[in-house]
Length: 192
Image (cartoon, rainbow, N blue to C red; front, side):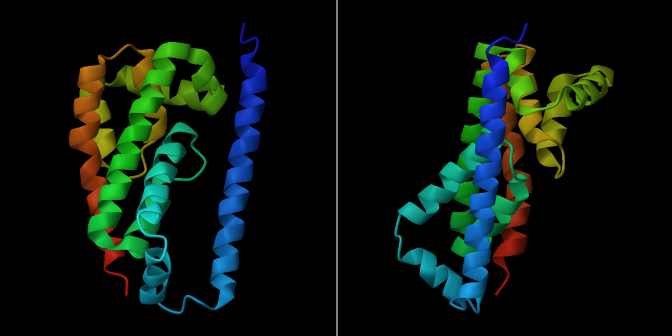
């Protein structure tokens, strides 16, 4: 039944692994370069890229929601360390919200096939069963966006599958997402 989606699933996995490998290689290279002996030197390095550095973080955060390779808190931590609490928060919030909306609409348009291309059937079944037990999915989604370590990326896709209204989804994301991101930004923005 999945037809052409099997090929897409393999391509997404290959791209995800390649992206993760690239990020790890860059991080290792940066760590061993000796250039960054403090947070201040790291921030000075990123300042040389001007607007492109925070823009790259924003795009990366959107991408990591749509193609869940890394946990979102890693990007939040990196953004706060590299750009400070304020700019890091703004980039992370905009990127994660944009990625959440993209994931929602991908699921609305392409249905279960795209969700199973991103997540295993076992993972889907596990969370669908937990969600089924909740009395109100809207409340469940809002609480999940407030708290760390929930599968927010999956829930964005799932929300598109169940045909939650776009307006309701957007309000939940816009009002629920900033708090956890702000906590990460303040915590990691204090690193000197």
